[in-house]
Each structure stands twice: as C-alpha cells, then as structure tokens.
Amino acid sequence: MRRPLRLLVLAVAAVLALPGASPPSPIPTGSPVALGSPAAPRPPAPVSAPPQLHVVGNRLVDREGVTRRLLGVNRSGAEFSCVQGRGIFDGPADDASVAAIAGWGANTVRVPLNEECWLGTANIDPRYAGAAYTSAVRDYVRRLTAHGLTPVLELHWSHGRYTGPSAGCADEHASCQKPMPDLRHSPAFWTSVATAFKNAPEVVFDLFNEPYPDRATPDTERAWACWRDGGTCPGIGYAVAGMQTLVDAVRATGARNPILLGGLAYANDLGRWTAYAPKDPAGNLAAAWHAYNFNACADESCWSRTLGPVAGRVPLVAGEIGENTCAHAFTDRVMRWLDGRGASYLGWTWNTWDCAAGPALIRDYAGTPTAYGAGLRDHLRSLNARSGTGRS
Image (cartoon, rainbow, N blue to C red):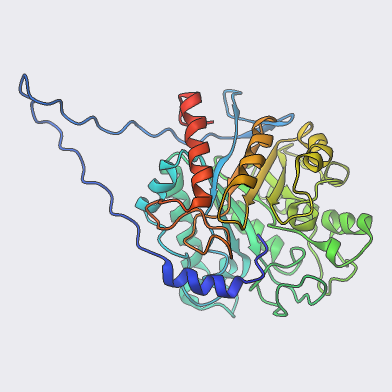
C-alpha cells in the first residue's frame, strides 16, 4: 500500500503494538475419566499443512488438482522496521500472534520484505540485517506453515533514488516505495529468497509490491515496457529490474514456486497485464491486484472491464484490499466481486495502526478487530463455515 502519512503511522504503530497473547496451557493426557464425570476437553484438531500450489489455467490448484484460493491478511512490518533501526517486525511475530490470524479463518499471510535488510547492506543496523533478518523471516515462515497458513513473501521496499511524480522519498535506500525494483539489488534479493525457499513449494513469491512507472511517464505503453523489460526507463533515474529479469532470477535457482506480479498504478491497473506478462518456464504466474476505495479503479464496472479478461486467463490474487473509512462497505463489495470469480484476496493489514491513516484490521495482536477489520474476519469465517473445511 502507498501511505502518504507513513512516518506518522509508523510512530503510532510503535506506541500501540502490544505483546501477543500467551498460548493456552496444554491439555493433560493419559488421565482416566470417571463414568458420569464431565467429558474431558477435546484436543485441538490437527492442522493441515498449507497446500503446494501451481497454476492451471486461471486457477491455483493443489497437488490433488483441487482449486484453492488465497484468503487472509497482510502482516506489515518487516519492510520498514529494520531500515528504521527499530527491529525486524512491527509488533509480535510469535506463535500466539500467528494463531490469532488463523483464528480469523485465514489461510494465507502476505509478508512484505526489505531488500537491503535481507541482503545486509552497509546502511542497515547489523542487528536487523543479513543473517539476523533472514533467520527471523525463515522462523516466521515456519510458524505460518505450522498453523496451515500459506506464506506470500513480497518485495516491498527497494533501492534506487527517485524524486519524480508521486515519489515517496528522496532517499536512494530502501526506505519507501519506489516505482520499480532496481537492477542493483532486486535480482540478488530474489535469487537469495528463491534459493532459501525453493524446497518449500508451499511458499508463494510476490515479486514487487506496487509498481508505478506510469507516474514517471505519460506514455502507457512505455510504462508497461519498463514494467516487463526494465533497463533505462523514462523518468526513473536508476537502472530498473523488469519483471522478466526477476522471474528469470527466481527460476534460475530451480525454484518453481508460484509467482505473483502486480500491474501499474500501484498494482491497481491490470489493463495490459496479459499483453506484457513475462515468460515463465515453469508456467506458474498469477496476476496481483490492489484495491482501495481511493484508487482510480474502484467500482464494479471498472473491475469487470479491466480485471475480468485477466481473471479469465490467469489466477487473480488481490494482494491488498482495504479502505480508509474505518468501515468495510468498500471491502465487502470487493470481496463479493472476487468471490463471484473464484479469485483470492488479502486484507491490509494485520497491524495495530489508526484504521483511517493506514487501514488496520486489528486493535491488538490477539486479533480483536477494528470496525474495518470485522468485515474481513466475519466474511472469512462465513466462507469457512459454508465450506466446512476451514480452507477455501
């Protein structure tokens, strides 16, 4: 998500973050139950491992060929805390906090990352960089999968000085959202991430958060060419890594994990996605879309016109949905539209921020929803109740 009041929101987040709830005490086993006494508590049902997904036509399917949807939340923090010298995650990343996410009926968590923190560049505090950072992310992925949640690892903040239209900062370092990934670090980031998780096929890769090369040039076709091919792009002062370069970097490691690719206009515009989609030797690409009430494409007419053709050809994953109203009327509409097409969606964000300044689903890390978050929680639970599986 693009957040103009980012620094203020992050300051509020640091104050409001609460420790996760302690896990419940284990149920004693091996004790006989006397006749006529109350029944012993049932142990929790075993958690199924998250599915190993691949693309078939416009669907994500598991190894048995069953269609799966990615439904859940974003867990923001690892993209900004490290570069700001405040830690690795924003709030707890322990088992209890992950269990709270699963308790909403979610089956997926998208985890935004910072390429400089992952690679351990010299500008990052060593306590939060390199091996310390990658180890923390690996541990979090293990916790997610232990709760049956699909991890989506995503490059959110990257290197490159950009001061053109809609610039988030003038800093060349990975301290804000840039219009495109950079050739200097982004291929190395994805080579490293893919190497780390190529033997974890349940992990999904989202190559870049919210591209906006279209803000740097009014020429839409050149913006889409920049998106796919990178190099020297109009209005962008650093060498760009296009989506083809990043797909190639992932596949060169032997990783066949599913890959998500967001379009232009902060991933809100997929109008030319199919025309410019990079080639993937694994045939495992899906389109990523972001939907907020303040986006240009924010109504059913636009969604049907621009997203419908994409969703008919490849899986559609709304990697971020949200609104800045502290309510959920807009996200309810988005979810209904996506449900009707069997598409996936993830709410922004599982953080205790001000739900108006930066859409926050929760008031605490035990999972108490905001008025906005209640819409997603109740909808996910209703889907699980209808399916009877807890997994959609």
